[in-house]
Amino acid sequence: MILKTEVIPIGQITKPHGISGEMSFSFTTDIFDREEVPYFIFELEGILVPFFLTEYRFKSNTTALLKLEGVENDEQARNFAGLTVYLPKSYLEKVEDTEIELDYFAGFSLVDSEKGLLGVISEVDQTTDNVLFVIPIKDDELLIPAGEEYIEEIDHDKKIIYVKLPEGLLDL
Image 1: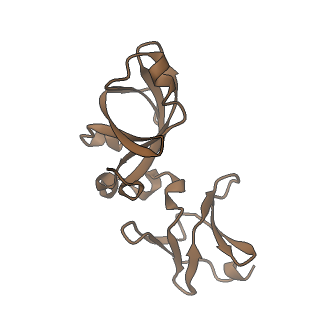
Image 2: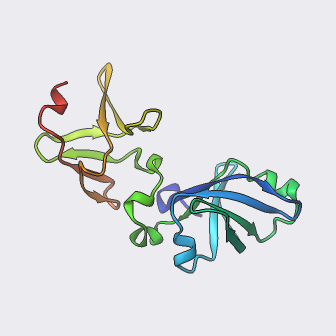
């Protein structure tokens, strides 16, 4: 059984393409092209299930068309529309942190070099130009910019992001 803690999201199936089971896939990393990735993992009815990749071709830098073993027509492909595409975490060391979907960081602890532990990220707000880590505190929430310039280190095993925030940011 594959656990959610053992996988990382790398993209999403957007829609079927044609009638032979091919699907359009938007991705944040092309690790599946740089490494020999035999399968993608999808969450179906709460269970993570691997599907072997039979072929793919790129449409752009962030979109590809893919075909999975056992998916033979557009009706079957339609069942995958909107599903997140996962890979085992073993590929994580080969993926740049900038290529990881930001929602992956929900559940990580955020530690500032000056203030220490700020809390646990409950969600990543991507609705504004500046992406924010949301940390619930009492009856409010702390919004921390998720800019690369603030992140010093990410420990994926311990689920900790180490940041150095600008002086005064936490006083706002």
